[in-house]
Image 1 (cartoon, rainbow, N blue to C red):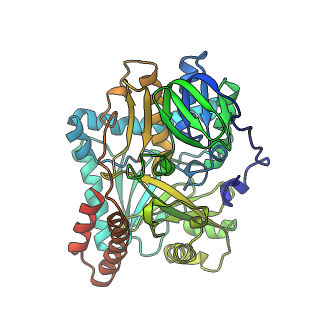
Image 2 (cartoon, one colour):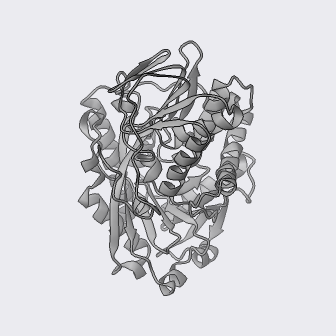
Length: 457
């Protein structure tokens, strides 16, 4: 048994983690869910809300919330990994626009559940900034704001702020401007996922921890200790999807790492800003993300850790000293006032990326096997939408959600090794090179365009 990772979020839980019993005998249920993270728990939550007598079992190889759900950056955002143009190609322009509106609404849906269920998730809907710190990033920020306007969205959904307005809100070094959306909340993800597990149990679901799934097929899930007979199966494994038989190339586990500082003084926060605990990122190529926590720390993360050959997942990969050091260097460059503060936590974990960088929520009516995932790091909100969508698909409800363009989307498989390893790590290095070239020469090069193609954008 592997206990949860040492992270700020898990260390903040109000009580020690109690491990639930494993599955020890065969059972019969209506829905078997593989994975007790956000996708699995939200699916169970809405199934039980809509059909209180439905029998749901959740099978978790570790403990509820062990994966990305309990250790992410703490953004409940309206970000979706598929661009509006691609969504439009998958359906039409109206559906693409509606999909983005539903993502806006999803942030409030999560907030409403947190309020109605009395969950202490340190929720604060302060919105999110993406800052620009050089002319290239500034052009990207302005282009993105104009892009949203071209698709019919208003400044109240996504807007550009000039240098003076930006600096008064988030006083990052060399800031030239920022985009802002109100559709994002800062949360403590571990508190949310652990509370969700308790709520779905109280509503009638069974959660079996330390129960590894060996295989699944129509009407049956086989685990190391017993089998589950079921009408529907939900694959909710997300970043761990490639560990399941036959799914090695369906998505890749990419590691995103994080740091947390000690609590910072009001003097520092008066200098930095983020008075409403807004989340923040910027327009560089190597993704970064951060928030001001409820207890006044920086929680800050980003990409940069290597992809491991054969889509290998191992808890030891949660620590990668060069990346963690680079994260603090980046944070201190953004906010020089914190250059001497202590880092109290370093952690990380895998997230899931499909070959076309597209998320999905699917149900095969012939086999009764459903799945959702491929969130590319934007899973806190999207997993809630997935849970609502999968519950409607399973209950055969003809809702608006089941007509959205990501429903039943199929991504092609990733390449075989060693091409997968070469391509993924090559793309990561290209992102770093692109940032270096932009900073050094103050211009975009073919590297940026190539990077976008490799990412599928």
